[in-house]
Length: 331
Image 1 (cartoon, helix red, strand yellow):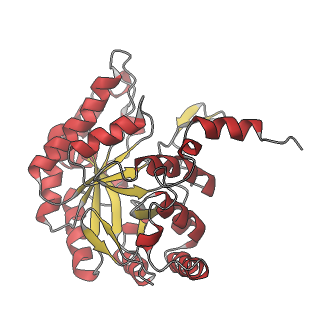
Image 2 (image 1 turned 180 degrees about the horizontal axis):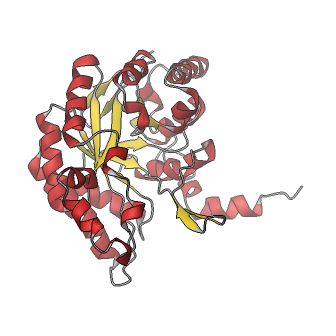
């Protein structure tokens, strides 16, 4: 059985790739993920604010009139709350590269075009195999049009691609007026990979202390359906590699994404819940399912139930909505 796959031109022994999470903060944990069979590793994201905090620029900015704007000082992590500063992050990449044989893909999240370019260059210099751009932008200005917002994403990608030669993926959200148009435009702009989708963690209200609280909710298998649909729609229509993320908790979840057309499957919540060794169980269960169904390779699985491959392509569009609602039986 051939479990190998190709992602952004990188050869992976299998498609299971731990996504950006605290699991990559410690070298020992990364080694456990490799031992459990991970095909590659995406490192936790480093934020441009961390670089600015280290230089004291943001600290100075936030400390003056901190309560006069929406993202005030009290809502930002203190400098010592971050696991590592920028130089330590780069050093961490180098240590990982020396310790494991699987591809290492750092992740950055910036707020300025110059920041994206500067840190992309630094990450390339420490011999990372690829780079993931973790784009997290919530437009709250009513004067920003959808075209302007989409252009921001495309401009970031184009500038980074000009600056580095390593493969670059974009981790984007599903919240676009025309999601597939955005996927196609990023593909045309040179994205080597598209990660579908970023999860936006919504704040909650604490009714006891009357404050806004950050919340992190781990995924479940039902969350899989969103990336599943758009990967199935995109497969065979773009050049960029496709990564599915969000809701992968079982071997069956991973297989569904592959059959929709994903090149790799990102794992996060399931490993946070069960530990890095759980990846081996998912991988072994994948092998068992493939043997039972007589699949000889991941390549044979890939895209076999994408929109372009199924008998009823409309099942991924309006027809699914109509059938789901009219077919529901009240118990």
